[in-house]
Image 1 (cartoon, rainbow, N blue to C red):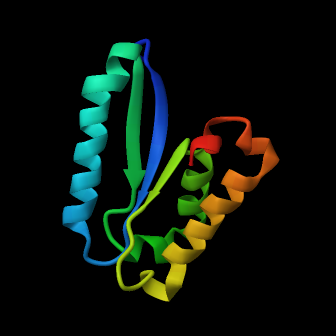
Image 2: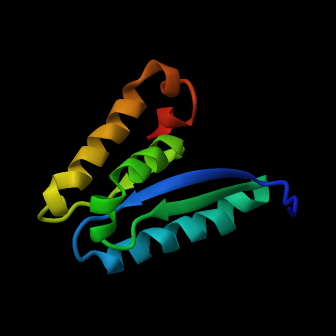
Length: 111
């Protein structure tokens, strides 16, 4: 494995519905922050998330695990919460972790 020397922080990007343009805009903004601010400090923000709503139905547990493992959570809102309101449940999971004292002393304090 190649050692790069960067501290990597995962950013979960949640965007239910037909929000591909908005997801791309968020990823672009995070890339700009990486280039201008983070990388000179040896920090790298890495976006993770779902490419389509269908993935949350079959992989809800894996999605929840990904949210728990992320340092930051970005929610893009639309007129619905995706299939079975699962993106809403994931949003509340992120808030729960933000408010949990075990996580609030770490990176989740910035969520």
